[in-house]
Length: 318
Image 1 (spheres, helix red, strand yellow):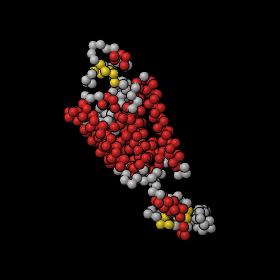
Image 2 (cartoon, helix red, strand yellow):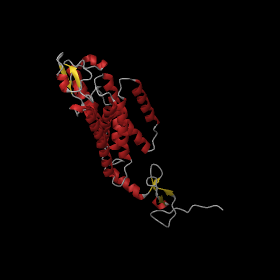
Image 3 (cartoon, rainbow, N blue to C red):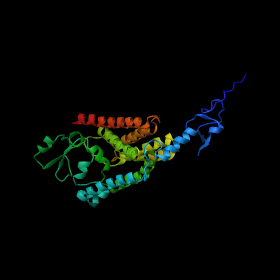
Image 4 (spheres, helix red, strand yellow):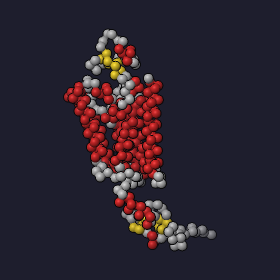
């Protein structure tokens, strides 16, 4: 004896058998309710909702669409270049473009260093193991200067380090990646959501540096934020059912480079990647009902977790 499934009926006309399901919401619809869409058919309510979003210029995951999705990327690139130019002009010199070694104070002020350093007046050497300003100033054999770190007086470094570069290739590769990734994400997420992904990724990357790097080493560069954009793009492509192979290949190459070059901060890269993926997940998987509220709660939770992680680690090192 064979069993047949009961016929589905149109959700708008309960007595009329449905022909297909709406491509957008999945509800059964009859021929009278079928509205042709770019892929399959949609119900009248989903079509009306889409038209409202278009009229209000809303993005697919909330937020207003950017008129020019390149603007935020231009501003971020400009800030990075401005800081880089200031570093070169105030002590980096032409040699620093290729060696990554700058003698001025600006890199030491802006780069992320979990603990402060006791350095010589010309900023070329430091005394390891000197972990406080009092100890540094007590050294009489040389003129020493105390450069504070995140845990002992320089809280700005967790963000300013993401805009700090010295070597030309470093800023060049990072800004090129930002140029490719930024407008794509801003087109889908909108300006403020994209900027939130970028900055929170940088902050989570700094949290990774605080916890897992040598407290006396300096870390700088936008790479943590760039990895965050890669993580966000991967989550977004997965959400819409896109082909993620190209993104995974690009990510794999960058991770291979991260773990094979000794001078690269894997802590910042992986932290940024996790932060960007988490931010994107909060933005694109938030329920449609009350979407903005859920997105705000999720973003604030990630931001609070990053700040708490940095604060706890700073207290442990102080």
